[in-house]
Length: 180
Image (cartoon, rainbow, N blue to C red):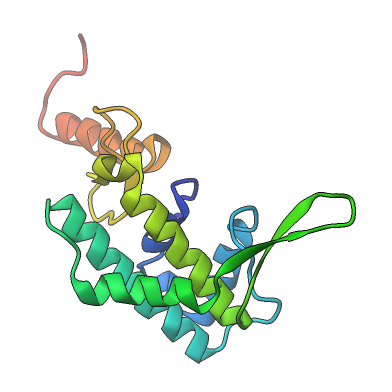
């Protein structure tokens, strides 16, 4: 499985919904890939931390799926997201040079979950929510924000190329001509 990042953080989280990213050893590289958008815990995640991330991911998935189907998310999913945000609220601190820095209350797991939940809130309430699509590639479960109405794949280089190669193979196998 090729990991495609670069979608809104909440979709990148949902796109980890594969067997490859449900083990502790596989989450740490994903957190490192998100370093510019997410403050990863200083210590590796525990099984309890991973279970909390998985649970939040399922609530975000349910909310995104509901919105994509034109329905309101279930109260349970809304409350789970809101609870994670409230567990580590952000606040700004004035620095001596009159700059500001944002900090969060809570332990490292609470801060991680709050950042992920806040990303879900931003996605679900933002202008891109109506452009969330599922990749049309065979066996691909990735979600993406379609920047163009004709975009069909999570990655033209990955799934798009696989589909084109499969079509070419079918034409060749079926005796069709590629001339044209």
